[in-house]
Length: 221
Image 1 (cartoon, rainbow, N blue to C red):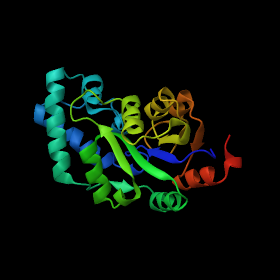
Image 2: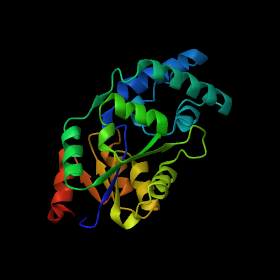
Image 3: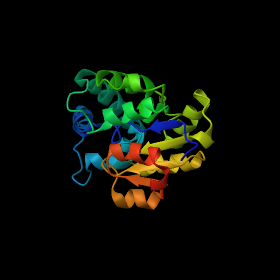
Image 4: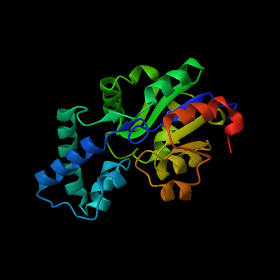
């Protein structure tokens, strides 16, 4: 932990509770296509997944339907702004403390880069970050491993000095695929079983514990 200088943060479920906003937008997209939402899909369980995969795999849409759903989703998301989205307790303080202690902070999210930048700006978090790596507007860069790889390349980050922080198994697995350690947060959308199965290097239950872990290497397990 002592060599870590660059911190890559997931967005939804790690910094921001966006479940209400995302749920409303998914419902809007389904309604526009005349598709009934299956009762066995919980919105929180799909947050953090690429939209294409959500609509195809969880709502059984064709490729063409999924593309239309994504368009309706983003249209409504843009109209809503950040209504219903909240910054998790302690996040502002944690980010401020990490920056003041010399860490460089970055975003690695499945949201397209421009949308992620707007979300961070609207919620007054943008100033904490040195850069944003998001999904491409097309589907060529949508999985977390590719997004993390893009961040490392785009911002010339040494994997030996970088660490990923997220709330879903894809954050942990994506970090491992890029040769960087990870911290899983349990207050987001991923279940504890999901996170444990992904085998993160560290697990925390509150954003403030990220600071404690990084500031006190003796706490690292």
